[in-house]
Length: 458
Image (tube, rainbow, N blue to C red; front, side):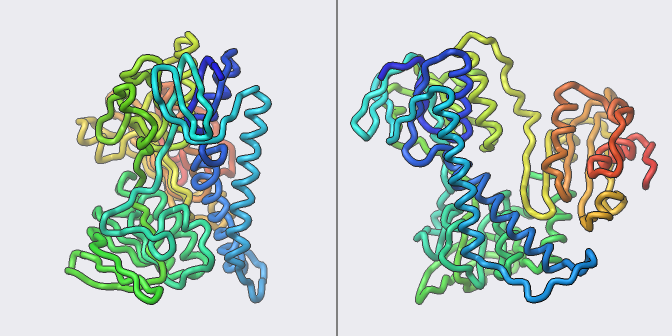
């Protein structure tokens, strides 16, 4: 059991690193204690999107008359939605197993732990030796001390995907991407949802214009959102959750069937042997250099357990850079200032770069453009006029500082801004790039044009 590279964890960081290492001619092992694909494929990115799609289809059906179609007595099957989601996740995990076999990667089932330099003990009794070891153990739902999860009435995101029955009322703690995606899913299929957010606005990491617009959209859908609020205590009696909430107006108590804690994630650093090799951590993250070397020789760390956004695509990029550096390929360090973030609600949210507030704080003189989808032909034809594209440029040099979107399919078009920023593209170069009509992507061109006083359709 001797390898060039051994990886603990098979999420989007671990399995991508394994495949790239194999492509570079390395003998690779990957150690996974659960299912291949990690949280992302099995309990995160993929199955949640399957649930959200089911909710979106149900929403379409309920508003079919808007498209000139009559549908009577449409009903949803909660268990069927859950089973479809699990089926999608299972198929994706099987796909990763195929890729492991195709790339001649040894898969070892069990919990791996560092015990010495170049050595991992697996709880199935095996010992793995490797010249280089990559830690990609990921993260889990953060447990709040005031919201003690019991897995049935007080739950995290895993349980939220496989509930036995649909709750009539749900309180969601946290309004980040996880919280708002579940808020959309459950409210769309008829659950009364209340979101409690500690910060002054929902989706607090997004541009303020996006947060405000999403707040209005969700309230219009019937959700109750309590900002500047916190859950102080939850108790369960007779299957009913009693939730004490501190709001701007004072303390109040509400009841519901289920409380979902969606207040972010925490890293999986326990029992992986960091102490055995003296690997340094700070604020719950492993300290690494630009190429993911830890403070222990021959040990690397990627993904949610290192500083940076806890996103699947970030973990994958880090994994590739890490194994390329190990293999002497001289990769460039990852530019963390150009990482796109996506929230798969309806409408969707996508962003990259600085918010307007952040850009002002950095002292930039700005050119800001904003184009609403209500003025988009494709959005009108599709019946999805909510949202906009907002662009932020440095007025002096034309640098594209940030791009923020809310609307149908924006998670698929944010990449235009990501690539353009990577290529140091100016606003005028975007304007000279002909965008197809009618498409949602035209809104990017129109927003840039609006920033430079050249917008045609506003």
